[in-house]
Amino acid sequence: MRMKRWLTFSLVLLLSLSLAVGCSKAPNDTPAPESSKGNQTEKEGTKLEPVTLKIMIPGDRPPDMDEVIAEAEQRMKDTINVKLDIVFVPWADLGQKTQVTLASGENIDLIFDAPWLHINQMIADGFYEPLDDLLAQYGKAVLEKRPQQMWDANKYNDKIMAVPLGVVYMSGNSYVVRKDIREKLGIPPIKTYEDLINFAYKVKEKELGIAPFTAGGTSGLQQSSIVAQRSLNDYDTHVRYTHALGSSLTLYYKNNDGKVYNLFEGPEPVLSWLKDARQLYNDGIVYKDILTAKDFLQPFMSGKAAIVTKGSFGTGLTFDQQFKNNVPNGDLETVTFFDKTKGANMTNFKQWNFLAVPKVSKNKERAVMFMNWANEKENYDLLSYGIQGKHWEPVGDNEVKLLDTKGYWGFGYVWVWNPIDERSDVDRDKRNDEYEAVLRDADSFTKDVLTGFEFDSSAVQNDLSQYNTVEAKYYPALFNGVLNPEETLKKFEAEAGPSLKRIQEELQKQIDAFMANK
Image (cartoon, rainbow, N blue to C red; front, top):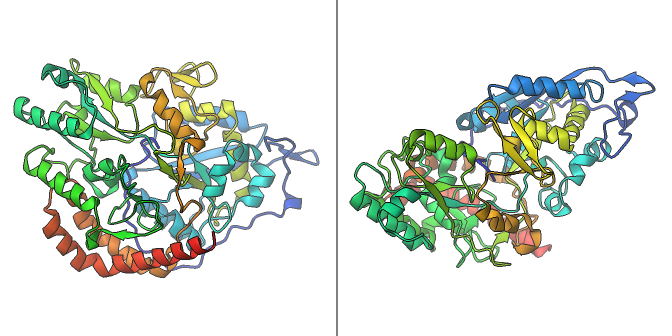
C-alpha cells in the first residue's frame, strides 16, 4: 500500500530466551464494552486507572507529533484513560530493531509487523497474543471497519494474531515520468512498457546530465527495483511473491497453479527480465549510483533522473511539492500499465501491514481498547491527518485537504488504516480514481488459489537466516541490472542454493497439504 514500504528485509537470528508472557486479566476483572464502540470506562462506578501504552511503529517522528498525542490523550481521558508513548523506528532499522526488542522481553503494548518483515516468524515463535477474544470484547469497531474477506484471509492457524492495516486488495503501481522532458523531446504519451524504455533511451541521447531511469537499489527497497516493478504488470503468467521470502523473487509463484518456482532453476519470465535490466544498465540507462542511494527517490526529486518506480498510481501533494521546490520548471506525470478489466488481477486478499499485541504487554485489554478508539471516525482522522484546521480539513465525508504536510504527514498505514474511514486527497490526480476503485472492489479480482494459506517457517528458520545473509550481497544489484545475471546467479546459487532449495521444498510441502485439504 502506500509508501508503505521501504524497509530492511534482512532477518536476524532470534535471541534465545524464555518469553515473559504478559498476564491478561480475566474477563470478570475487566470492564466490558457498553456499546459497539467498546469504550465503557467504568466498572461498578470506578473510572479506569490511567495506563501508558508503548507503541512501536516505523518511520520518522513528525515535528507536531506531541501536539497530536496531547489532543488524543485529552479525548481519551474520560473514556479509556490512555497515554501514548510512541516509538518511531527508522525504516532501514525496522527488521532488526523490532525483532531484538521483542526477543529482549521489553514491554511493548502494540507493534507494527508485516509478512514482508517477520510476522510469520514472530507468530511461530510465540511473541504475539491471539486477539479473537479481546477483539470480540473490546474491539467491535476494529472488526466492523474491515470486511470479512480481509479477516478470513489474514488469520494465522485460524486465529487473529494481528489487526490487518489496509484499504485495498493489492497495491497500485506506476512509473513517475518527467512530463516536461517527454514533451520537449516530442514524444507522445507513454502507453506501453516499450514506450517507456524508448523514452529512456531518448533521454540518454538528448538530455546530458540526467539519468534516464532509477529505482530501489538497496535490500530494504528491493520491492521497488527495476525487475520487481516490471513483475507487477505481468498479466501473462502472474508472477508474484511467495509466503516464504516476502518481496524476494528468487522463489516465486506464477500461473495460479500452486507451484513454487526457483530462480536458480531458470524458469521464465524472471530470468528474461534480469537480462533486460542488465542491458539497460550496460547502455547507461540506469542511474549509476543506484546501489548507494539510501533514498532512491532523491535523484529523481532533485531533477537528476527522468523515470522512477512508484508503489502507487499517483504521486501525492507532498511528492509534487518537494519536486517543484527542487525543479521549479519541471512537470510530472504517472504512467501505469495496470489492467482494470474485471478478473485481470489476482489477489489473496492478504494485507501487507499489521498491528500486533505482544505477549509481554501488561496492558493487552487497554491496547485493544485503544485500537478500537482509533477506529472511530473522528479519532482516525486525528491520528491519520493531524489537527483539523492546522494540518488538514475535511472535504465531505471521504476526502481530505492537506494544509501542512511538514508538521504532520500521513502514516496511518502503520497503525490505524481501515478501508471505511480512509479519506482520499482532494488534490490527487483524479484520473487514477478508476484504478483505485478496482483495488477497493473485492469482486473485481481473480482469487488466488493460495488464499488463506500461511507458511510455518519454523522448520527452515536456519535456512532462512543463512539465505537472507547471502541474498543481501547479490539481489539488489542483480535486480537492477548492475551485475551480469548469468555469472551472478552461479555465484549466488553456490552460496545460497542449498538453503533456498530446502525453503522451496518446505513451502511446497505445506502448499500441497493446504491444497489437498481445500
